[in-house]
Length: 341
Image (cartoon, rainbow, N blue to C red; front, side, top):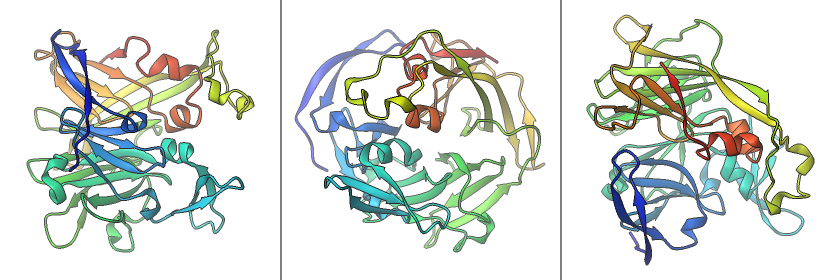
């Protein structure tokens, strides 16, 4: 993988108080949007909405297949010759046009890596993407994304509705959560992908705004459900200069999205049920627009036990309305919001 000349900047580690000198990549990588991270690597989207993996410490970098190799995306140009994408949804023959910024912001919902990209083609990248949470994957070095379709895996029933995923290093499987609380595993260890449904649909309660899945440090698989509601704010956000006069009337500067409730469940595969939890056993959860994580607070004394640290990850709110007030309130510009559990 190619390497880049790097600047160095001192960074403090908030959990320990230590500081380290970290090399920073040179442009154009500094203009990428971060989609996810794992194993010390970042997954970023460039200005043309194509994905890359980047190690910010070593500068190692590799390109993933371009966005136009997703099954429902075609490139085109607008009347002024600028790059655009036609995105086809739900069998509609008429595509939805996206400019590169819209595609970069809205296309990619979640990304999960099977291992460090330093392993080359052994690294599998799993995407949850639009429309409505479809799944595609690629190995490093592949030229195209491959859709995981019910045409090939009938147990899926439908291709959409997936919310979150994680990779289990112990059994070598991806675990994927669907919006109706069912869980699937993806097995890439043989000559063909094997999709298996390991947790049936659960119909309890109202559907949450967001759902997450992860393997806790003590081994249990957890589902986290999160509800939100919109509230008014008294202070408007200032728009960046490049948005003034550009769809300005569509941006509500006085609206904020607040988390109102969080529920956490242990996935009991043997009994095919979800067991509501009342404690995180001295751990803290991080939920947001990146990977779902769980840490033992004894290892990070600045974290509060049995708390959930949250940032905003509503795709509609962060991406479509990302310059609203909540962008300043919920994405790390204030102290991270935490909720006692």
